[in-house]
Image (cartoon, rainbow, N blue to C red; front, top):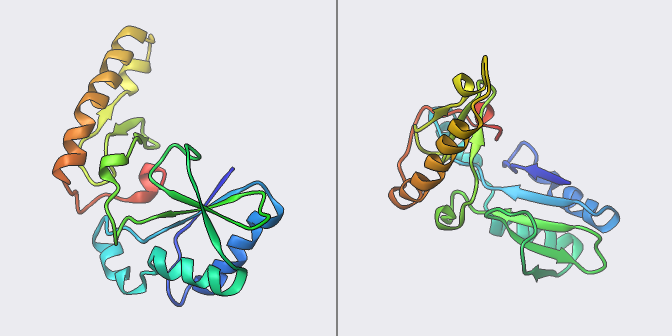
Length: 171
């Protein structure tokens, strides 16, 4: 189970160690995600940014050393660590102070049935017509394969859509 947290100064930054402490008792993957600038609203909040380095420092100061964990854990862009004796892991996603586009393996589907190859692109594939009224499995597979083929271009070009809402893409 993954627990994603976007720490923000003055809002929940005082709970960073509390969330990390959960990994000592439970086999959770607690992930700290830097605030992404995906739209104008998040751009206004960027002054609240808690970087991954700030979160790591808070955890180290209160809970001790973070040991790197290697290998596939969450199949995503997080870099994982573990506290001594912990059952779970602590991940950090540097969406603001770093760039994980080249290692991103995610597609997102929103609540309206549209698939996006990249959080920051405007590109979407509407799969609803392929699901209703009669499922066309071959066409659905072909369309999803096509979006996977173009995904690296979005990662490479860092195309940004300033109007994207993370809440509509499962973020």
